[in-house]
Length: 211
Image 1 (tube, rainbow, N blue to C red):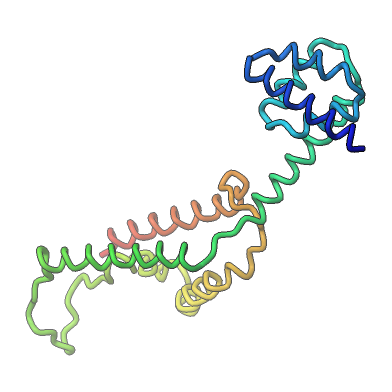
Image 2 (image 1 turned 135 degrees about the vertical axis):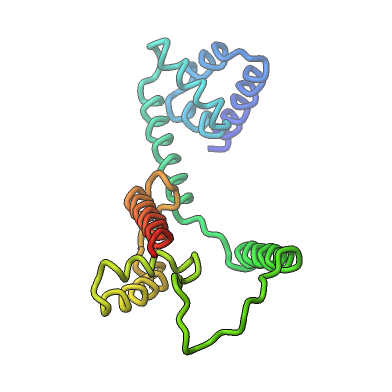
């Protein structure tokens, strides 16, 4: 076993020298001179890119030990599966990653509001009279979609819907158990978000036009 290990290490060094010299053909010829198990062990010790080049050249020539290429195919599939698992299980710690990101966003928002308050202060109007309802009273722009929504549904539905939506939003991390983090693999979630945002925009516009 020691002799085989030393022999494999010696061959690995020779193959690495050939690869550094861009002699892929020489490396493949050298690999074919040993049995499939040793060739497999040597190629597994090489970087993935170089191993792929050697395997592709090996298969393209149509010669050599078939068993070695089959083993390499299995190893390639196992590596890809491991990479997919690592990608899915990869997590980002709340502290300091998320904490710093959220804190930075909060500081920027406060700074922006402060600047707007200084340079564009809200003007003071006449004192409010609770006995007189001004004409054309509307809520602030961020409530216009609810204002329009109330015109198309019964009062109880218009009151309960925002509360139910807020509760669902809070529970969303517990309800959504999909481990995927890529947007291309969250088509239903993305489509739902687009529909909700479109509905809010349309209702806000309708609320703005209403008398």
